[in-house]
Image (cartoon, rainbow, N blue to C red; front, side, top):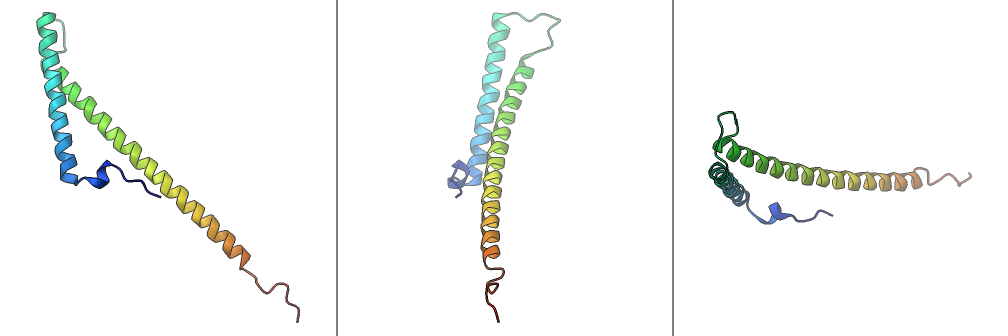
Length: 108
């Protein structure tokens, strides 16, 4: 039996909007963290991590986690569907084996 998830009860445009807003939130938090780090620890010339790099990395990490959760839930659903299909196929094979030759014991 298939379970109902968050994506089944909400429209796809709502999920995209929520993803966009959370992505903007992650970008803003990365920016604020970069500003905090820049004020607390003055930047040196040798450092390559600047403010926008930190915000972009935070956004990419969020998107990677979101896509991995979608992929894992998809593969779990496919695994359940395949398990159900194989179980039904084996049951049908057992039924067909029982009814393959119903007149074996009849002698003429």
